[in-house]
Image (cartoon, one colour):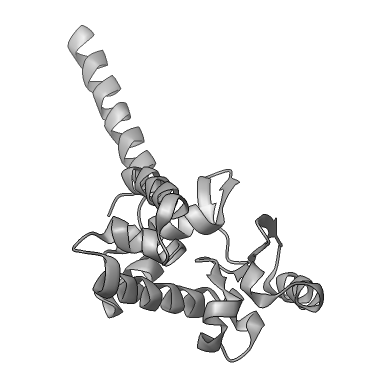
Length: 178
């Protein structure tokens, strides 16, 4: 009876472990976009978790309808709600102080990648822009390290904010599985 109980417990633990791993698996869309830019899907997903992660019942997940205005984050239930809010923020805040979407792309520096500011809330478009910028950082400042490229993605000028961000991405990266 003891051996049988041990087998049942081991089977249950293995089942739970694989369930937990799948909760932290890189979603297919991230893999597809990352492949197009020759970047690791795990790093793209870790950046999205760092930039727009929000706590849900399933754990921390990137939230596409996120806005950061001058360091303060806002999350909206729909793309339409986020766009309405963004329009209001744009009336009173310089674009260089506004980040949008999964990768929190800055509208002042990277808004030219979008046909409209609200397009930054389109998950795939935002991931493509994030991946493009990350790849450019890897080529110019990554020095063979995707974590260095992530630091550049956040703050091309470097310094303490870039290093702090690098550590945050690294923490998320440790929880991500392929």
